[in-house]
Amino acid sequence: MKFRLIISFFLLTASFAAFGQEKQARKAKKQNSAVVENGLIKVSVMYPFAEGKTFNMEYYETKHMPMVAGLLGSNLVKYTIEKGVANGIPNQPLPYMAVGTFYVKSLSEYQAAIGPNRDAIRADFANYTNALPVILVSEVVR
Image (tube, rainbow, N blue to C red):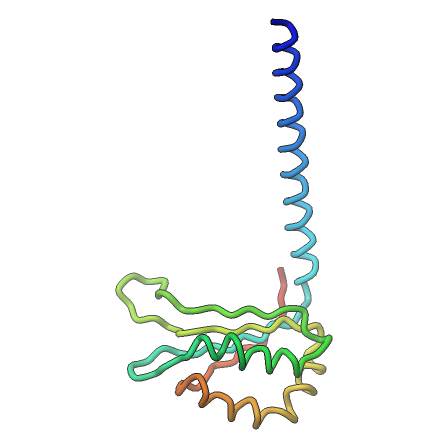
């Protein structure tokens, strides 16, 4: 009986220790990701929803975004692709069908990479949408 009690106590203690370490690891990872993004330039390319507008998410995800990401080279930290699903206000139209976001280290390097390729990037729009994007360039504060 004492042996079972000792083993149970040992297993319980080990479980609490493992849980505590996992929680600390998640907290450290979250803090590190915040540090990585602080000060980055965020380029958001937003495709407004409107009657008759279309968007081919598969093409955007597999062709267009990787093409643009390739142009950005080592300046690119990461990129994300979002599919619009709802408006923040119930029973209101969807504001954006999709949003593509690039996180880059340097605005001037971004502009130097995109500038000469602007026409090719715009020409590719017809392959996945008939909507004109709204582009917002911002600095990540937190």
